[in-house]
Image: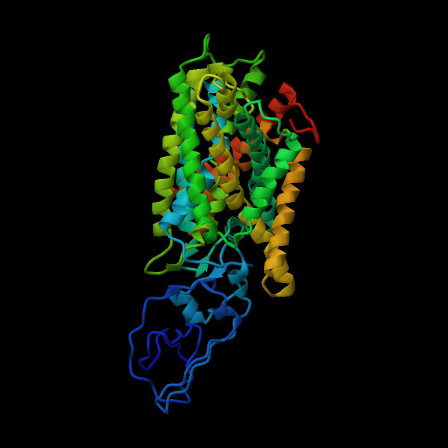
Length: 540
């Protein structure tokens, strides 16, 4: 077996000359040993920096030294690693000659661009981590009360921040030479492909597709509210039906979804993050400025029976858990960054994540506390703060201010649709690539994303009450956020048995799975007991 060469050429070359891939081998039988050269640190190879290195073999100019033979670049082919896991370079992998690159990663929207940074990470994380789900936090306080509401919100925030840290650290492994660029890849590596499909596939798909459906419902409804404010009831324009407003929002979302990859929507995520912070801040300021509602009550809502009270409390915990969704996108966001052994992507990723979640905390706490202080038990269960402000203060505040709040909600919903839809776009394109072994053409990408968008529109029209089951959704998604990362850490990092890390992750993981089962049961009970109006194909 021939010795490997470094990624630098043997002879000096201009800066414009293409770099030799580290997978190339040197035939020592054809030439004497070259003069010693310095070897740069091993790189976490990202085959998706561009498409050209993967689609064709770069032309290497022969050296002027007559006794030096031009090294050959190995033809890229499918790796033996799990499907779509980005290979990394490491001393172990180089020693084993496992440096075959998988060209398919360079054709998928999540990993085809690797020029992300901490700022992009902060934009994406903030846009996915804060949104409409935060507006119903005061509803959870009506069941938990002041003390337990704040305690549960704080514990949930710390818990999910810890599991977020675990995911960021697990994204790349120097031992195996892998970058797990998607949540399902990491779950498959930790639990096995079959078990991962049973445990994580449905929650992940629901957090992506189900969130997009909810955004269409909320976005269409707020578009109708915004039009009513602009019109003021005096214009003679034709008023659209709720289904038509859903379609208006969907068309805008589909048009925006034509941006090619996750890095290309960094500006969209920035706008979404700014508008999310904007409407959250404006809502709690309006609530405090307008003062408490007359006859407001802070007594916890108590059901008639003990079992009903327990399930109401569980449903409240599910609402809090639902507010901290977005972990299913963390690995995908980190996959957009370049990475090497000297400069691993986890460093800028965690830096951007800390900034994003500091801002998220500065939005969620005032929104939950001020909303509950202003409205108490009067807070609407469907819509939360948005419905409360429109219902109680729609005529008290300036219409321009109310219109700006609603416009921010619409813009944020459009932006969030893009980042939550990206894993679905990635999955659809991967199926084409696996079958035909070539990238999806631009027209195919446009058609597939339009099909996804209008498919979500159909579900939104068919099941318009989807937003009323936030507690149930929180229970379904809770393992992805709070439990699975702990078990992944135990499986892949193998901490010392009975050590601190071992105990912490076992306790949190087990508690998360038990809590998920209880929240699902509580959510189902509340749905059945309260008799949520099931109106198929009748959006209001």
